[in-house]
Amino acid sequence: MSEPTVLVETHGPVRLLRLNRPQALNSFNAEMVQALLPALDAAADDAQIRALVVTGAGRGFSAGQDLNAAGGGAGEAPDLQDIILRMWAPLAARIRSMPVPVIAAVNGVAAGAGANFALNCDIVIAARSASFIQAFSKIALIPDAGGTWLLPRLVGRAHAMALAMTGDKLPADEAQRIGLIWRVVDDAALLDEARALATRLAAMPTKALVATRHAIDAALLLDNAEAVQMEAEVQGRMGRQADFAEGVQAFLAKRPPHFKDR
Image (cartoon, rainbow, N blue to C red):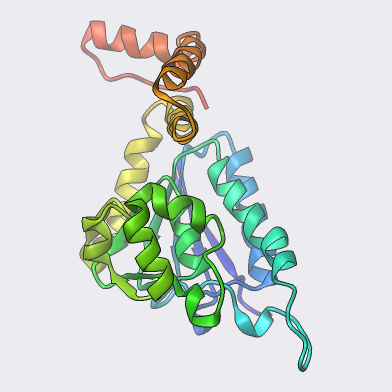
């Protein structure tokens, strides 16, 4: 039997998903997508899971779309629109709708849609040897998997245009400097750092963290007055949750809170 294309580990309230096609730098084919989406759904449906880490097996996070598996016969172009709508759009939507915080632990190269898959996660931690490549222009394409939305919001139009047009490799330290990712750590410490962060987030008010994701993303499309109104509406809902009452009681009692909402 062939090895699973996605490996699943559970460490208490933290679920770790490891992309597992190391011989192809974890490039995505239909088989891996068909394994990853149910794995994400399973983590979403498991009430015991309160944080998720995604990483890659071997020497890379993901080289993006497996061009050998993109379809199209001899002399026939693959249907890239179908591939995006069938594979990448559902993956991006699932990551951004997870009911728990999602951390990408980027080891080695994250290229093309593999890079943008990582950037769709809530927090990106990278090994010092990692790199990010918007490789699309090298094969006469544009960024996908949400890249056109993500890049200018993360690093501004100037950096987004240069990264997308040149397709140059961006070292992890530079990715952190320009705000593309959150943190760079030594290679040997990557998984420990990612798990430690996931464990910390798992002890926090999960529903509030996810609401923070949605509110920040929504605010990008609003003016200031609209954003303040949206904050009031979300805050009103969060104030009726058990975690808010627990947080206030713990603060007043000077004790650690025990959050349970999800």
